[in-house]
Image (tube, rainbow, N blue to C red; front, side, top):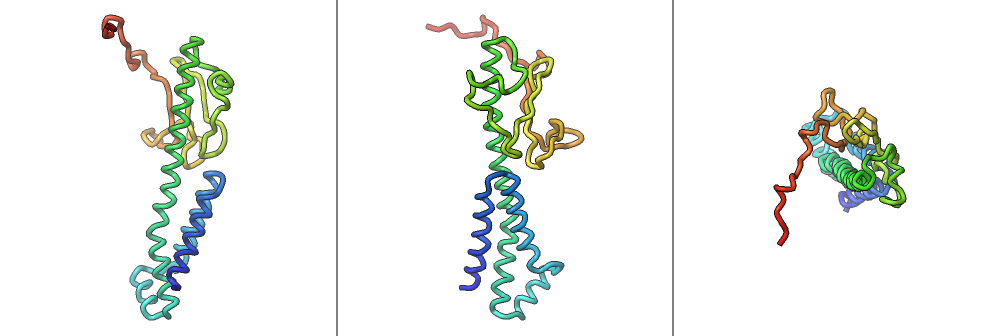
Length: 193
């Protein structure tokens, strides 16, 4: 009974964390839960934790076991929130990229600002879900660069995991070299029957 009650208490706090409105609030709540669980036995090594649990009361044993189990699971839980938000970000950016392409196809150039996509291409410009603010967008010589600040919620200037220095921004940009743009010549197309 007691272990299930402790597990349910942890679970309820995790559910509440996922119910927060913004990414920042969700991550902060999940990190607070991780700290609470990790702080249940500060400075104790695993053998010390096991020893204290074995010589403690039944309540203490249950509390320690529940905390150890949740301490193992919690980092994975907060990382699922990051992964889900990164996927949502990529989906929103893909939608924006498609609308930017449609805008260019009809008007011959990319817009100076994303708000120019409304109302003809979008009812409203989607927000970067990591900060509930606008995506970063700029025209470049060959098209545009669009990026999200990523899960560190800091503008790394469009630097990604592959950049040096490294960042965690999520970037979509048009090719920087005409050679990178695939082309289809009329004679390469299959004729229609």
